[in-house]
Amino acid sequence: MEEQLFTTYHSLILGALKKCHITPTHPEFDDYLQRARIELLIAHRHYQTDVENHPPFRPFVYQKIYWATLDTIRKEQRRFDKDVIEDSFLESIPQEEDMTCCLVASDLYHELLALLSKDETCFLNDRFFEQLTISQIAKKHHVARQTVYRWRDGVRKKYQKLKKRCDTFELGNVYISVRRATYKKQKGRDYHGKTI
Figure 1 (cartoon, rainbow, N blue to C red):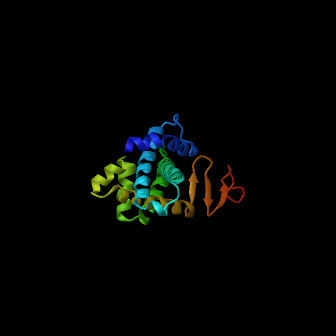
Figure 2: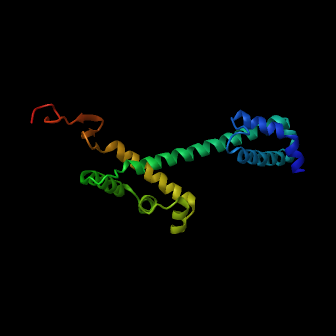
Figure 3: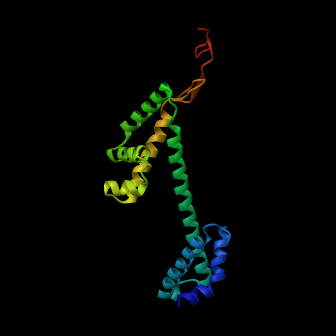
């Protein structure tokens, strides 16, 4: 029965995927096709329970597959965006041997630690210093991965608030931005332009 459903509605599935810009040349086409087939089966079973109260089957299934595919794409995009922010946080911590640079990173780290809960602190240390994956952190602390994702989101939100609120330093020409007012230290002059 399932194979007959897949054969009968194959063009409908491909049409819904194509509307989401998922074509056979897409690198994850097979994954999306499989998800669409599963959605077809779920919709078919749901439709069979109460045929009189549903719209015609083909448009119903097409829309269900289209919406499910869009939801999947959005979830993957959100996860990708979170990973990019996580990587940018790691890159924002200076890696140079310069002592001033290390002190700034240390100050930022300690300010962030003061804001974090115990679990968020464990996540930060495990993720960035021990380089553990989300799954490894979950296993280490005997919690679900979703819990670790929650810790990660808490760290990210507190870091972003701290970043907006605190002074930021760029070494080299020493730029200091204090509550959105930026001054450039010029050679031989103080921040107000007076000769030293």
